[in-house]
Length: 337
Image (cartoon, rainbow, N blue to C red; front, side):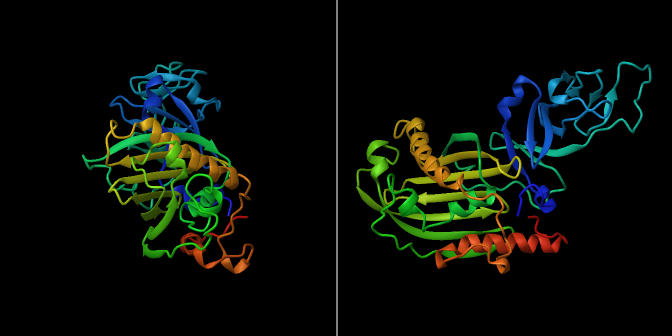
């Protein structure tokens, strides 16, 4: 499956940019291979549209704002959040022709980010645990381009077998390679996976992010997958600390994604500085990407093709593939390779 070739995947919201980035004026982004422009309208709400003027195809992201509308830098044509041309200075007409219109997209602000759906969304933006809990703080971690397929990152997030190898220098134990049991509960647009993972806290001895001194511990982990490329992993330590990681892989093109990651924690800055939390997860993400960026971007979701071998602990990833393939089939769409 090539992620930008599947039309069904255009029917979901993806986080594309921190809302603060729009305070500086119009911004460009490539979502699912489509160049889009983002800006703040007259109500200070984010808007999104195709980054191409309907007049001479110039990039609107090179323009500026006029009363909450995007202004084309070429001839000054002006478009509102619905894509309608509201003014073009070369004419005395009060209302521009209705055909003067650009493609607009559904756009919302949530969790400090701008979320965009290129087509009518099948689901709403996920509701994340602890996001409205006053006992938790939010720490923004990563906003960067990664070079792998979004499904690879999602599978990896639920892959208990890779921990003792990929993360052997941080919290894995390569001498105990047998992965723990995973219990999966399927939902309409995703699933929950519960596991208890023995960890060797080597990284925490260097980066004090867990506020605990034990060399080894068992962390209880409830991970949630939100179709197609979002997950929240809720890790509970014996001390009662909850480290809840939200990871989103927003497809840019078939080989790259925008990684958006933030964390909810039930401790305080004076307990563990945000810089230590970010440093801890930075090590983990770097270890994952060192492997994931070597994988093939065309991930086959049709298990009948037998293009990859699987093992018992791959059940979360297998379920992802089955559910994505079922989505395509319901929409009369074949897997694009």
